[in-house]
Structure formats: C-alpha cells, structure tokens
Image 1 (spheres, rainbow, N blue to C red):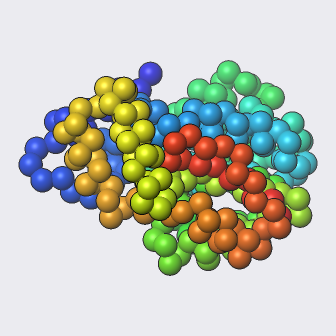
Image 2 (cartoon, rainbow, N blue to C red):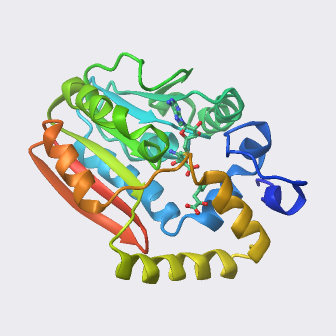
Amino acid sequence: MSERDDIYQTLPGNVSDFRFDAAVARVFPDMIKRSVPGYAETVAMSGIIAGRYARDNTHLYDLGCSLGAVTLAMRHGVRAAGCKIIGIDNSESMVERASHHIALDDSSLAGTAVDVELACADILSYPLANASVTALNYVLQFISPEQRLALLKQIHDATIPGGVLILSEKLCFGDEEQQVQDALHLDFKRANGYSELEIARKRSAIENVLIPETEQAHIDRLYQAGFRQVVRWYQCFNFVSFLAIK
Ligand SMILES: Nc1ncnc2c1ncn2[C@@H]1O[C@H](C[S@+](CC[C@H]([NH3+])C(=O)[O-])CC(=O)[O-])[C@@H](O)[C@H]1O
Ligand SMILES: O=C(O)C(=O)Cc1ccccc1
C-alpha cells in the first residue's frame, strides 16, 4: 500500500511549484485518490475501453503513466492478441516505481501477460505509431496550452482507423458553475482528510502548473486534431473523461 500524502502538512515556509518528484511519487496513489473525484473509475474503465478498442498487433499508450495504474488496467482488459502497452512518463521517480508495479503484475500473470514497456521520456517528443488505444489520464492539464493541439495531432496521426484516445482532465467553467464545482471539490478533499491549510498550499502549488480548460475547449481541440467523434463518457464534479474516436 502507498503511504499517506502529508506533503503539504509538513512542508515548511513558502510553497513552491508542484513537481512530480520522489516525495510525490512515494505518496502518489493516496494523493490522487484523495484529490481527484472519479479517479478510480476512470482507471478501471480504461480497462473496459481497452477491451473494446484494442486491435491485434497494435500498441496501447499510457502517456504520463505515473505509477502505471492505467497501463495495468488496460493490460487486464485487453482481449486482442499481440498487443504491446507502452507507458511513458518524464518523472524518473514515477517510472522507477511503476517498473516495480509492473514486475509484480508480471509474476502474477506469468506467461499470459500482455507485453508492457516503460520509458522515461517527454511525451511531447516520443515517437508514437500503430496505436489502437491511447490514454492521457489527467496529463494534458500539465502540458502548456500552446503545445496541447500538436500533441493531440501526433496522437491522432499515430492512431489506426477506429482507434481511440481516452482523455481525462480537470475542467474549468463559467463563473456560476465554477463556484458550485469548486465548493464540491473542496468538500471532497475535506471529506478525504485534507486540512484547510493543506488544501490552500496545494492550490497555490498547482496554480501555474495544472491549467484546466473548459469542456468545449477540449471538445473543439479534439475535433481540430482530426478525431471524428468525441463522447464525454464520465464526469465527477470538475473532472471529466472523453473518448475521442478516429
Ligand atoms: N511532458 C511530459 N512527458 C511525460 N510525462 C509527463 C509530462 N508532463 C507531465 N507528465 C507526467 O504526467 C503525470 C500526471 S499524473 C497522471 C496520472 C496517471 N495517468 C494515472 O492515471 O495514474 C496526474 C495528476 O497527478 O493529477 C505525472 O506522473 C507527470 O510526471
Ligand atoms: O486539482 C487539484 O486540486 C488536485 O489536487 C489535482 C492533483 C492531483 C494529484 C497531483 C497534482 C494535482
């Protein structure tokens, strides 16, 4: 089991910009479960989606894989033959820990396991090809807005006809809905044991790092990248997940 996220309890003085460093990697499963409403569902359903959309002899990509939760869900959901899942993250601490999770899974699945490869790399420059399913599970929000369309185009171009992108993101809204969604998200964090101080510090740490956009901005960009159909399959408060189909 992962350790409890107490990063913003114990941090002294000024809060610096959020980074996916060793301290975050250590507590990551606890942090994301207590911070992102619907996280467990989007991970579990990526396995179901992979089951439907993965094709024989193709790649599945988990871009910004962190500890490999989506990689493993997809591995357990894939029914097609000869697939390879490639998990990519540019945080060394994340990839190192992910490799342990994959190794544990390897030993429980033995010979039946779908191949998994991990890479410590920037997803903006990683060559993608022959993709039937790609996941960007709460990752695009950390990419600078000017680079988002180019990344989605690369994913689209690397995807086979009928293949999909799973895109999960934090949303922002017009003023009135923003107030409602913010209040509910705050309540979610409080209910999960975060103090007002921890919530305030985390908010300031992610302010310039996690840049949410509106649902419409995401839908428009997915079509602009070339996807022919976009389905919003899940939303919990201010976190959403789309399925974009080529
Ligand atoms: N340019 C980049 N290149 C590679 N990785 C990156 C980049 N930018 C950020 N990351 C990586 O994207 C991940 C975002 S967390 C994803 C959760 C996971 N998908 C999950 O389903 O458990 C989401 C969150 O913490 O809210 C981190 O591991 C970063 O190192
Ligand atoms: O949006 C928030 O308030 C978060 O805390 C999201 C988050 C979750 C995990 C790492 C960084 C940001």
